[in-house]
Length: 193
Figure (tube, rainbow, N blue to C red):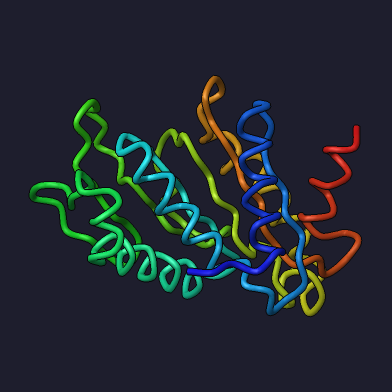
């Protein structure tokens, strides 16, 4: 796969943040391959650490399921298996529209390897080592229904952020900016403090 210079910069930023114990925020306009790169990043990180407990949070359930399906396709692919031959589906665990289980050699965790949910959806589970917020802010929850903006911020803050492992957790927030009052701008302003 040949990546555009924008995508190379995105992954370099993620690696820089991880190396410096920072969370990564990427704000890119619609149509620039954010979600494709987010899915690739998530599956790459699983290949590097099969004990990973990841949450993939999107603005709507349908997007979360589509991205999880893309993750499953990558994880099952011949090319992925050539790079990460030890990544195998969890024994006795079915992959669903909301969860993927990978064999975890050093973990007794009952949590899925990837749990995909809508930001305002149910099924928050327990701890996560990695949370990928991918297009949590949407046209609908930022512009068309402005009253939902605060609910999205409060849910991210009081539900999803509480799931991240406080010592080793890593967050990637990748989104299109829609409005000065949306969750992306809220976290951008928090990072500036």
